[in-house]
Image (cartoon, rainbow, N blue to C red; front, side, top):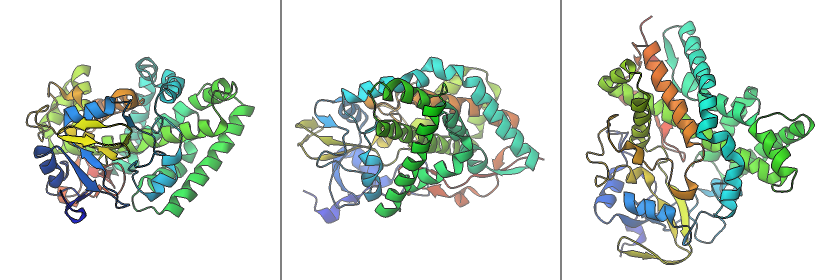
Length: 408
């Protein structure tokens, strides 16, 4: 049995020789045992599950695997996360039946039908941002000027909270997700966010609107199905889940296409929405944005591979690695927008905790792919590729900035 000194410190850094690929030490684990213990920030040793079929099985095993961070042995992301986001009673942390009850309260705004209804608004947002970039010259930071703005603006509209407060939201998300954040900093960020949301609840009690937060207040809180704190925690979870992930997906996705100009040219030339849909699935599979995995704890003995996992043992579900499983995705390290089974990606999770906002994120990315490369056909990196700064210190993999330029 490995000693603690032999264990992988999770998450390990990626190799910047291949920054789109998982850390080589994790790929080695997947190809050998498929499951093994790792060491995390608090010296605990949860199991890391890496193979596609094992990951799906654990995601789906509601009766023996819990998403509740309050249960002993749960392997939380870091101390700040444990004290704040991990303490929320929201979709991320609830088991059934509570999970499905709460999920039904929000899915009317996140269903395929609801998202398709706002696709023109998303298109308008993307076009407006491109207009702004073109008006300023022939250079931009595609993260700050574009990728970070789209999901924030869409989510503010969806929730009915002021887009003017976007810098506050972005700073709060960054503080909450970063592994460099201390517990005190995370708690201060949480307190500030809840104070802000308290004011929003008061405003919507006085003046209802038709956005999601107001409907939660007047339909669910007023009837006693949710408390005031429940509403605030749901809204916070949606802000956190719906902004940083899609920002990273858009930024990394465009960088990937700039590195694969033949495939970007195909996207520019097509009006086939099926190809765009598949391209987004493939980008999510390939990029591995949720690189620190989904966290669970075992509540009854369960076999994974050759191991019997016991109650109280923590589990990290490495969906990023599962999406590079050669048994499911042949030549898995190759990016291919025509990959026939790209939709089998586990980037959005699996089972009851599959991301409720995945359709919204996918449509935002589809609109970007169909619009940006076509409108700025000479788009290119403004710095050498090895000068691009990747963001590894948070729960989401992403970019600090993406300097681009185009022909004037």
